[in-house]
Image (cartoon, rainbow, N blue to C red; front, side, top):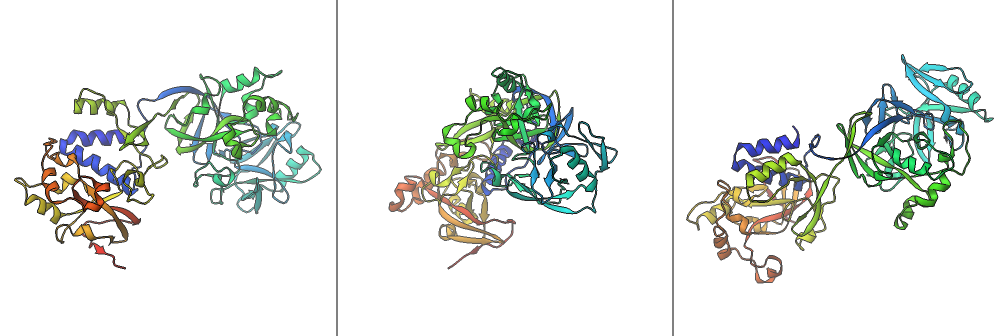
Length: 520
């Protein structure tokens, strides 16, 4: 179910459900379980339109323009062909690209009827089976990284060697799904640790705008085309270099996230129409006005920036003509600390605003795993330098039923556990025993106490009615649950009720499990 539908359904049930749903959501995020969802936001900022989708099945080979393509974690796929999943090598497995053999850019690879079809100027078409499971697996080197590939056979080798006519033997290999990929982070440090590629230079997807190419052409004696820069997604209806600021995009059901710019090399000086390398333009012109910020010299060095590398956050189908939306992220403040959140959309905002009826507009945001979290130590100094999303202070708050019963015995009206919004509720113990439980084992989970939970006016909100009294049970708690004077710098006048824990060992929790205090 989409996030918006989940939220709205929970809200529509009753006011009590609203409070429990929001509290449970924060608790889950604090525990790091997260909420996995697939959604198409209703309101985004359109920044362009997809004008071309281009696969390069053979690394350095001619681009194949398609009207639709699957966008997978490791790049675009069209039928049996996947982007940069074939590679030309020397006999000992060293990669060969257009930098060394410029005429590779004229070599076309297609698939038809279970055959792999190779075409090049002045060469007869060669057809070989797409799958050749009995051929040898070769160990290859792509930019100093080891990777394997299935040899495409002697017939392909002879054809390539004859076409390139470089006085040496060439082979072709195919990357298969069960082979070990290259890790993008080992190629360029800005990439996440789990991003994988086959034979691309660095990333699964490269995006470029037509306007950026037009801007470059205006500075040259001869126009250049998009094909020279070998992108996968080409965008129109935008200004030049707008893509530099598109941190996250939605195209149909596909969501991609920008990691870094594409630093350009001598390969840009190969003419895709002739296969001739001039070793000067347009690279020299790019270097004159597309250098990185000095603070990024350790990443890009002297390479000019043109186009942007993206990772795929949500797979799906891409179509030429689809609008490209920039996804808006909201920077919000949680207890004076900045943190991001994915906006849940205008429909949720309208619903919330109407429900709360406070004369102002409200929005809802969702914390996602790749966003920068808050540091607990900046929320409360006793915490180690651990991380949280939107909780008040900690990943886990624990409270005993006996402590709530003790409090109720001092009030005119009983209160329930739900008023205090814990994550773990413990029974079969004395009131306030949790104050001394420094480290606990519950099944495979191990948690460590950091500090007490200092209570505020939120405890005076009745979870059954949503009405705030601003007095009880807070006043009664203040009368007998104050901190030790030595801790006034931490808790000030807040009464203590419940305990904050950090998670030392993750696992699955079950109602009914025994809670063990760990003693050292």
